[in-house]
Image (tube, rainbow, N blue to C red; front, side):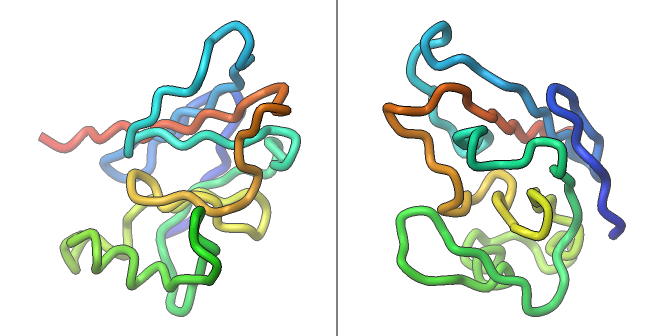
Length: 130
């Protein structure tokens, strides 16, 4: 699968999914509402002009939020019981060369939201499957 740029704010269709990207002011919106379909990042730690979505490729790894090491994307997809036929097309969100979100499953440790965060990059996965 070929990568597609994600505008902020904006949305992009990728296979049966849409990725929606917005910037949020934490003082006006309150604390983030967590869901597996949404990922939050401190926008000061992400180049929002370099966001793109693509499918996986062999050997791709990510530093998973909350863990010390790197995990293979293949292992993340298998552990989540994503069917083998869907794995090559599962949406992965990148900021430049950095994989930051295996959409709907786990985020990277890059740019976590803290009490000092001024603006939040909010990424949402919308599934259009019947």
